[in-house]
Image 1 (cartoon, rainbow, N blue to C red):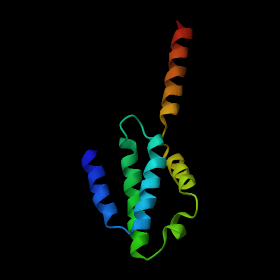
Image 2 (image 1 turned 135 degrees about the vertical axis):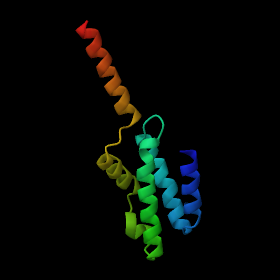
Image 3 (image 1 turned 90 degrees about the horizontal axis):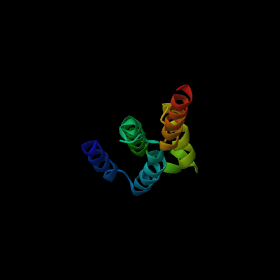
Image 4 (image 1 turned 60 degrees about the horizontal axis):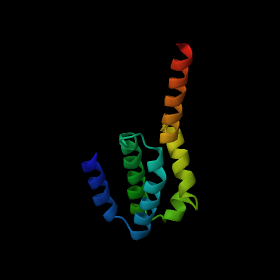
Length: 104
């Protein structure tokens, strides 16, 4: 996973500065939706980076791609991909523990 993140950063450095800033915001907004290792986000991050590369090559601005709401984009993306946040995992674990205790 570390190698993948380093490869992502190399790809990001080739993008225009406004795209690099968008990448930082995207990372900040997607990581709270990761599992404990973050592996569930690798394909999502790769796809988003591919989108950034394509739109930069086409000459579109970050504003045209994401609008004003990068956080909303990330929330929608994480929701569509079915990623669960730490809170979701802990809530499920608590529910499972309660069921076990009540069942005994």
